[in-house]
Length: 249
Ligand code: 9D3
Image 1 (cartoon, rainbow, N blue to C red):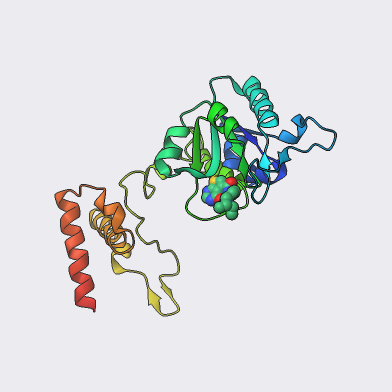
Image 2: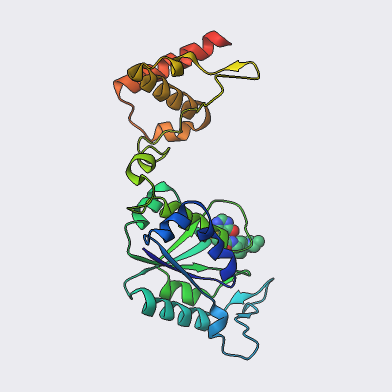
């Protein structure tokens, strides 16, 4: 996949491919990231691409023309059919389904805003979808773009043992939170790992992990459970979890 990021801070966004899964994706030629700076398309010698908002108000607005030209240049490089995403607090909230959908595209153009916002005429004429990280205020879209790139990189075919590991994610395979994890030593500062992990009984272990995943989701994210249709096994495991919890208190 090719991703072109349009940003006033290209050196910030490029950092995402220096580490971890996005780096592996680039090394394996599954991902190609390039950044374009709209300042390179400014129409003045100061490379200024922001102006005061019509109608007044605080802050500055990114102007339409330099952004339009940057998007056109990106499309020339990546293919004119590439979707244009804009990172925006007004956007649809990103989730794992968005990453899965977008990971199937061959090219993406990701527009990052700074200042108060972007001239709305550019947004309505050139942006296909606005995506948000959530209901909090950042100072620009770059970190959101980096989140998107990281989330997509680990889903690209050829990256990691992509099928195994990505398939077992919370939110992806069964829609539940993850079960807890334990590793060596068997006893750490007086705390032993749950006995079942040492038993070697794989069927029992799978049930235990599913029970813990269900229980945690019930405790911490009941909204996720509401969206699921638990099968009979899952329902009885969750009932066991709740019963054991009540015994313990
Ligand atoms: C405090 C300024 N806000 C006025 C009510 C508007 C505003 C403008 C620009 C708020 C944030 C930003 C910059 N944010 C992003 O570009 C952004 C973002 C975010 O702030 N939160 C969550 N997801 C995203 S994606 C892009």
